[in-house]
Length: 166
Image (cartoon, rainbow, N blue to C red; front, top):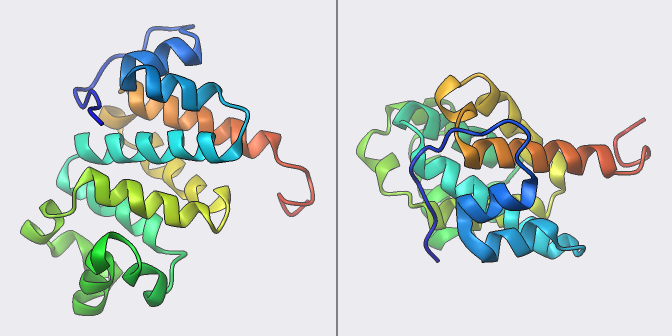
């Protein structure tokens, strides 16, 4: 799968499916418009991977901190051949920004696998990313991040009130 990793400015009023096609091609456009939660989850994971790939190292660290926070060590071991568990056990997640070269070894595909795993816990876990993306002007202006934010917010709004803790 080849995704466009170059930051793309988001035109105002661009329909979600057109933006998805521009960002990730027809596969992402189909996943974004699919009715099944599995396909929509696939779209979220793909976008998270793309946002991660285009982020600076400090932003990558913050994105990973938010994604890994809800996972236990055993769940982290099960993702990306244990890459996240190795880092967590070596230095802990609070000190992730000091990783430098180790952080660069984590690929977008690893992050997609991590996002898939986190989604098993529910979309609330992914909502932690909204804060990181929203506070970064560079990420927030990219088409992939804008689409990801749109899908996450839509997902949160479409959940029944009892799932939202209301």
